Image (cartoon, rainbow, N blue to C red):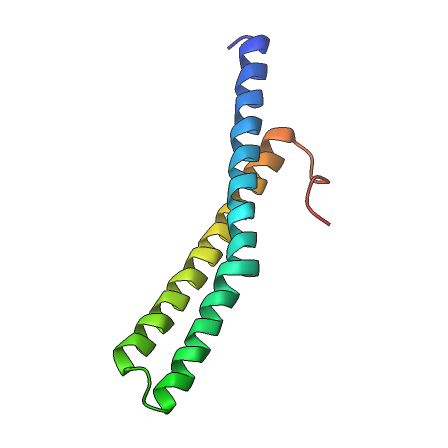
Length: 100
């Protein structure tokens, strides 16, 4: 490898890591601030409806499973964002780029 090739390779890795970080961090924020609270509200509503025989058990369970799936997707997105941030730190060679 020449110096120029290595610089291009590092720049490409930085670009990929930064793109992955932004995408997964945005997904995590979306799940945390919008999707999960809304799904939690749906579960609470379904539970209240079930307690007064307005909602059947299957729909209550489905709403709970949906909430669990969203929570799993949130943790996956958060994990992916941290992995991308670690790749970015490795490519840049600096540790002070971590979020404060």
